[in-house]
Length: 310
Image (cartoon, rainbow, N blue to C red):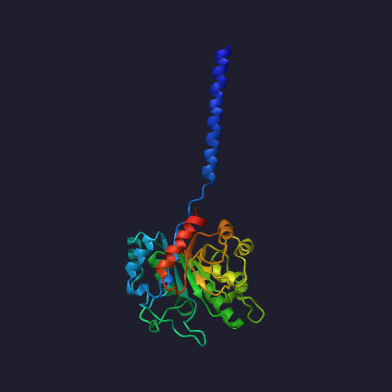
């Protein structure tokens, strides 16, 4: 091989090697690529205003940058006064995806001493009779399947005594079995009460232990768990893959007042960094009964896009 030929060979080989390194780096980059999560919102955020203008609310949600929604309760009954397929068409028409729906675990009862919250007119709201999983599981599952959602979530259930907890877990297991048969993933959503001892037992621990991990997952409300003294990241380590859904809201320093995401004291960064271990597939911003839900949702998504998903 002549010197010139050798030089050309080495030059070509070097170019190929560099190209190989570049290709390898690109391949690694592609392998490590994590798509940006779509930001969702729980429509309970708009409980006081949505029924007055369902389509208008969804239009504003979409315009704010949200891509997914989780539905909840309505003073109109059903799905904001609509049938499942009608509501799905309305949601999709606004460029949104309907991923999840909240239902009650047992007949609705106000806590002792509580009053119904006031609506937009300042008067106590009235709610039509609502279906619940204890008495109407099959119908609720069938309607959710008809609407094409992926997740059916029990929003709350009685846990005031061990007998109530036992009955609630039986309801969760029955509902999860029906949901699985219908092609839905069943989940349970927490508040802070589930982490408080009842007759020496922690309701949430019993729910985790006495439900099938394949059929019953959990929608972890991060703020309520933190208010109860729990560390979501540690929960993910202890129960990996059990939390495909999250609720994201913020709290003040006293852990008493709910605030838009990013305007309180919760450090969300380590929680979002541990998303893979939790099994998180979707998360929904939620703000319970804010004075201005539209301002709250705008503030929350601005922080999430800039600080958590950038």
